[in-house]
Image 1 (cartoon, rainbow, N blue to C red):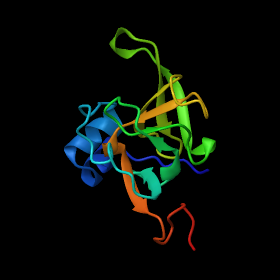
Image 2: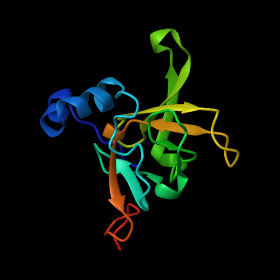
Image 3: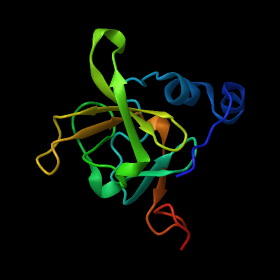
Length: 140
């Protein structure tokens, strides 16, 4: 996969202030406030910055955490991880593998199917309903 790189100024021109804060500066939206927290529609969740498909709706579940949660990515190669030692905690940060957008964090307390919880900020996602062109990241 080819990496996408842009300057902070280019990202600021493309993203609203809240989306920039989350995806480029690692901020977190308040729990239960995101547009996709309770969504149940069939489709794909793409990176809001570069449109890379990240999660399928069938991997989404209600974790009770206040953020959209998934038990697995659509493709492991599309979600990168790195150690996050911010806020006096040790966590695993998840990022878009193409554009390095901050998505959220990964926790080992997910459902039995995988045991993992990909806890994602809605502002980092763009939902594409099933049946739309490129709903899985490829042209149909």
